[in-house]
Amino acid sequence: MKDSYKIHEIAQLCGIGVDSLRYYERLGILTPSRDTNGYRLYALKDMYKLNVIRDLRQLGFSMAQIKAYLEKQSVDNTLAMLGQEEQLLQRRLLETQRRIDRIRQRVADLTAARQVKTGEVSLLSLPQRRCIQVSQRITRDEEMDFLIKKLHRDHEDKIQDLGNQSFGAFFSMEDLERGATNIYSSVFFVLEDPASPCDFVLPAGTYASCFYRGAYTQNAAQLRRLMDCLSGRGLTPAGAPFELYAIDNMDTMLEEEFLTEIQICVTAV
Image (cartoon, rainbow, N blue to C red; front, side):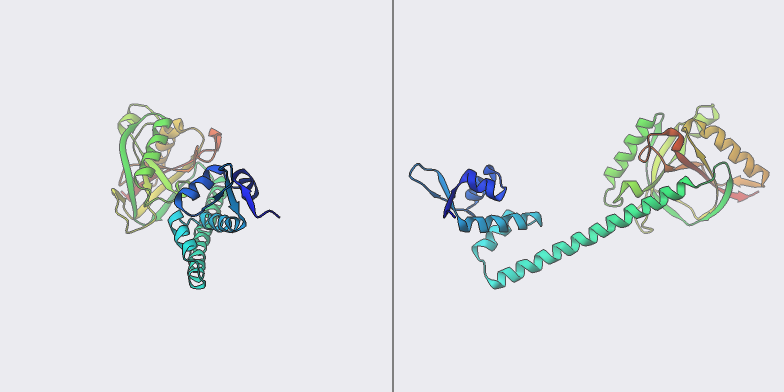
């Protein structure tokens, strides 16, 4: 085995780019010698350092932390570094488990949504729901998608995973009354944290609910059918109707698979 290696040799042996090796040298972490032709020569001890750098970089340690560790390496410092590594890995395990839980919840939600019966009006007793929203007249699906992404970006601290986020839109009643379908006045997210600051609250109460599948252009007819059903049951609206999207274009490109719920708060006449 050779005692020293040129830069391209050590790069190949350790799977590290030449530019990275030069960068480590500029930081003072590596100090290769030079041969008679001025070429860098790396000793076997440099391979050990590169292994340490690789392992700690994969855990997210900064180059400054790695340099400080290599310059003052001791059993005490190694124990301290191992403790930090364990803490980092524990945090990653927790985050990985949270992601697994969110995936499982989304799988359960989609599986349940596929079994939902459409066309039936039911009454639900729902708790207060805190919401954030963007108010804007929405006439195209692309506008809806843009506003959903904007709302998510503006409130990333409250919304960790858009895929599991409950969101909806209020109908533009003025347009519906004129016979125009699939037009909305705002889009909103329902927040999971009941204490989180919000833009408005959907009050606790009784809500009429009805699901439909397919294109949103049918929402005017679906809403009329819901309102007729309420009238027949002696119920009257106590708020503005809105849609919630159980399956939408984030889940499928097949419009016939879309599942939408219309809700409206109601009271007895």
